[in-house]
Image (cartoon, rainbow, N blue to C red; front, side, top):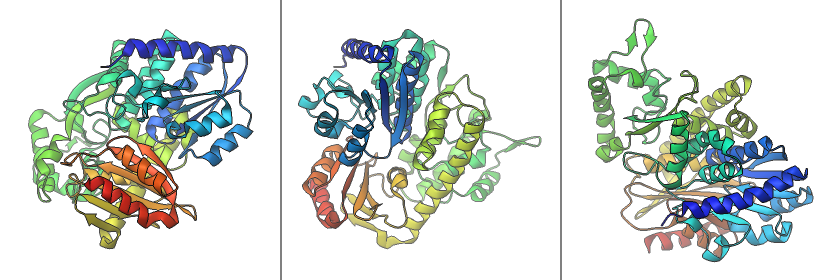
Length: 468
């Protein structure tokens, strides 16, 4: 049973302690993950502390390991705040920082770890951290507890939630703690929610570009193929321009949207699972009312994609700047990064399609060898896109690629139509630890870092656990 009052009381107590550090002029560092949930949660806490006059910086990292913890400890900050990571390394954090840290997170932990005074975790308060509470919504509750003036940061919590694919309620809606954040944003007039088609760029892109840019679900013959989409929509008789200007999906009436869905359904139906995939393209959309209609920031899911691009392409500072309100040079840089990101993703996916030897199917498990083709920062997005495509929606996808000279990065996802029962967070943690690595995450999405020499053993352990 969700215990919002308990979470609010805990965050109020913790925020007072952190604000006391700020008032004393102590040096604080926020360490957060590079994905969109990490960028938004780190930005929320950073904004709250900056507004309180804190001496604070934020650093984004793709992974946290004992070596990096040692590096952070050597930098002699007075206090360390971790968002969207660190939950599996509490013993190492305690040894390095002696209680001078706080982990704000939503990844599932043991009951013993969740009760530690240095941890505030969604699961402890009855929220499913894989569906109802992301790191950004946890960070928002912390910021709101620090000051009621931080309620405007609820917008970033909404973006973080959809970025983490937690729009898992009826009609692709947000639930739980994420809904609390959304309702705060709605009450402030910052976000409106409505039902519509969920194509990428639904408010900002020409219709054929919006369809071609949509990769979840992956649409064979349409995703990544603007010319083919344009031809298909022309053949369907859809009016794509008003005078000399391209129309957007948000401008279509219900009959026109019906024509569009018929074109997409034909593509999806050719590979099976089309009806279920189409259902995933209709749902609750979140419009950021104060953002310009001609930028990717107007729609929460597009905002999330922009931030993921910044994180995965190594320009996290740009992503943080956009979260903090930069709308000129940094936004333009982020939009260019988004274009590069999409090109990189399409190239990686096409490479996997062209080389069948990289994909090994073991019953309901799919092992993807992405080494030399997909960089470790793009591995998670590639795994997510694969599980949204018709051929993999009923599978568990585990993708592996090189990380440096001696390690492998692993990303795993569960398809929406998977008929079995599996907790990937537990699978990744147990299999990784068994071979000398680290792993963890959520029921439906998790990751690991393992020694390169242990790849075969790791695959075998994962296969055993998934089949069980």
